[in-house]
Length: 280
Image (cartoon, rainbow, N blue to C red; front, side, top):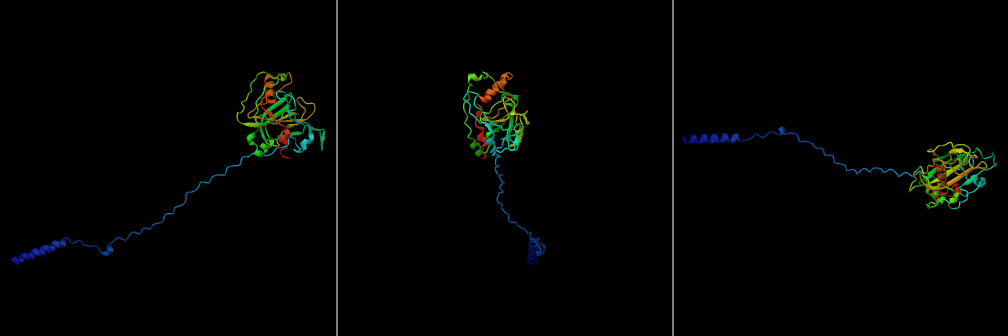
């Protein structure tokens, strides 16, 4: 009996041991290894945004003859009245230079000869046959648009104080401009006077160097056909609606404008031949 009991106990132990054995999967049951492809990263330098080149300003670097078919050098041969600086506070001297001839090359008489713009700019004043300038116009060219070499060649005067006209000039005691002048910017103003008719350009027009603006005439206070060419430097923004003097037909406003332009020294004269000789 004892041996039988031991045998049964041994069998039971064997069975219990077998029940705790875990079957191992066959080698063929293992999943295939995962293949991982690693692509090395490429580090690129940061892209530089291209900086556009600084544009070169379109400076005005040349002067054109104010008379068609005449070079700048030719003008010295047809001056009939040169520039003469007026006395301070007075309206004497000669504020510009006059060009005229009776016969030049194949041209007989200057009247009707096309007048061209000597500098590009904006038409700021047109005079409708007003004494003494007759049919005339003023073109403004800002100083900061001139090439440095050209501006230096002009040797323009520094800003000078304005003056009270001499009482003998009989300027209006008071008046008011209809435009606002710049406190910081200056311009060159060129007046073309004694034209044959109204200019062929209007206030506000932009004109180019050498563009025709009118015809030589004998209007205003003039005894013979000629071009009166007058140059000044002053604050930017002048827009004279009209100006007139030495005639009973002139208005108070026209006389005031004339005195501001001619006598006050706000718009300072310089010899026009300095401008017209810069290309020699």
